[in-house]
Length: 285
Image (cartoon, rainbow, N blue to C red; front, top):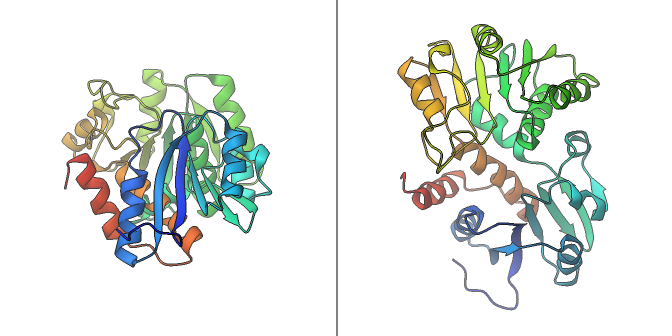
């Protein structure tokens, strides 16, 4: 890591709680690999307006924004990218000489992670969940790729139906909603090529939980769980037992961070070094 001095450019992640974030180890590994005089830190943030003022006053180059601030921060930005506006959330802020630009890199992270294994064009995709991560992924893949079908699965019918309406306004992809009821889920999986879990079900410490029965999976499926701790959730373990290909949340996390790195530095991100740093921190390398 480059030694911090009076010329160091500062970036940070803001949220609350923030103690378990892996963003500093990932971004600082990238700065070290490229020889940049940058440093990335974590700020536990409860007063968002003050944090944004501090970003301008201290000339902080970039913020990663996490729970619970992804929606509220839009109020304090000068510009918000069209896709982030449609998603309704910002996870990345870039400070260009006091002008704050907001975007959302979560969906691009998921898209790049998936397409390292398989193109989404012409595929039927099922997304489990209807929260912030689901919105980011759904808007991005529906906007960037010609899907055969997109199925959104949620526990709150009003919430998931609202997301379907929002998505359908500017996408030609057939988009439908369904529930987690066993028969409905079995039917959705039977036609799916790609299944994406955006719920927290199965995350440490609740590793015995799963959002979907294992006997619904088959060798036709690519199953992507946005969770990265544990590295193999029960969902992924059961999908793997039935010969499905599996993907955890590490690549998505790295690729979304890579987009941030490019925005803040203007350089191509060192993907391998970033992923290695995350895997070392998780104890999976």
